[in-house]
Length: 48
Image 1 (cartoon, rainbow, N blue to C red):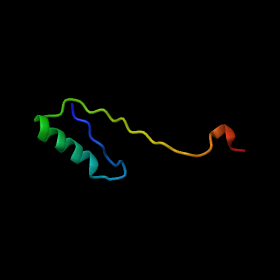
Image 2: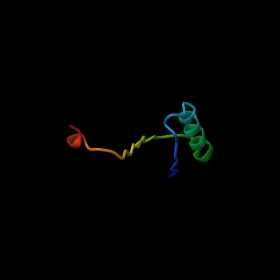
Image 3: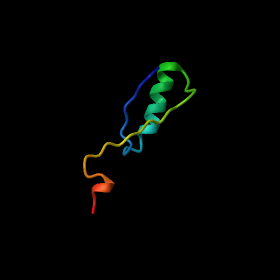
């Protein structure tokens, strides 16, 4: 298992993530994109 952090705004990130994985394990069998965004602000139902 290899957990990597990445900046989704950086267009070079996908290639780096794949390269890091292949360097460590010799191949990439599966990739799970678990991108999340956290916002602090008003909830939709609180906006008038």
